[in-house]
Length: 129
Length: 174
Image 1: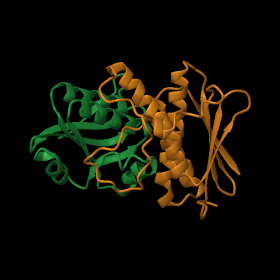
Image 2: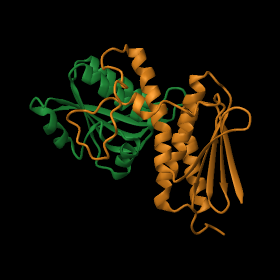
Image 3: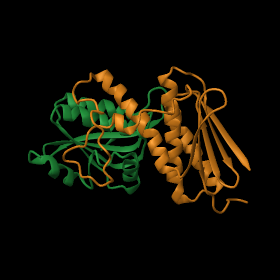
Image 4: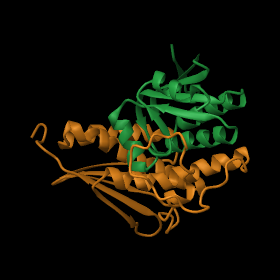
C-alpha cells in the first residue's frame, strides 16, 4: 500500500503517494494524488534514488494521479534523460484522458512512451527493446 | 459582480491552497462542473509559474490571485518578476529528442537541429536547473493550450499578469 508522506513543517497531509515494486524486470513507481510545484521534488528524489540504485527500466504509473503541472512534467523529462544517458528506459502508464490531455497540450506525448497499463509498458521494453 | 482576492508568499506549499479556493469560487460563480478541472489546472499552473519565477529571482513579494465573477469567471494572477520574463525558453530549446520507442500519438513536433543538450553531459545540479527551465517553458504552452481566453500582459510597474476567463452557466443561490 502506498504511504502518504506527512509534511514536516505543517503536519498536514502532503497530497502525494509513492510506492515502488518490481515486476517483469522493471521498477514500477506508482504515483498517487497531486504532482505539483510543492510535491514534485519528492517525486524527483524518488526517481533519482531508483536510478542511482541501478534501476534502468522504470515505469511510472500515473493511473491514480489527480493533478499534474509543468513542474511534474519537468521531473519526468529529467528522469527520462537520466535514464537514456545510462541506456535505460522510462515509460509512463496513463489511462486517464484528462492527464493525457496535459501531455498532448504540452507537446510531450510524442516524447514519452505512454501506455494504457503496466502490463503494456513492461511488455514494450522487456525483450531488449 | 463579486471579487475574491488572495495574496500569498511565493511558497510552493500555498499553490494547492489557492487551487482549492479557486475551484470553490469558480463553482460558486457558476462555472460548469466539466470545466472545473481545467480551471483548477490552469490556475494552479499560473500560480506555479509565478512561484517559480519569484524563487528564481529571489523575490519575496506576494503573488496575487484575483477572481472576478461578472459576465464570466475571470482570474488574474499577478507576479512581480522582471519584465520580459514571460519570454521563457521555448519548448524547442529544452525538449529532449524524440524517444525511439515512443508511441507517437500527437502531432510530431519539429526537431530543432542541435537544440537539446546532449544526454549525459550535465551534472546533477545542472539537470535540476534544466528541469526547472523545461517546466518554465512548458508552463505557458500548457496555459495557452488549456485556456481559450488567455492574456499575458505586463503588469503596472513590474511583473506579469496572466488573465484567464471562463464562461459561467446558471448561477448558484441567486
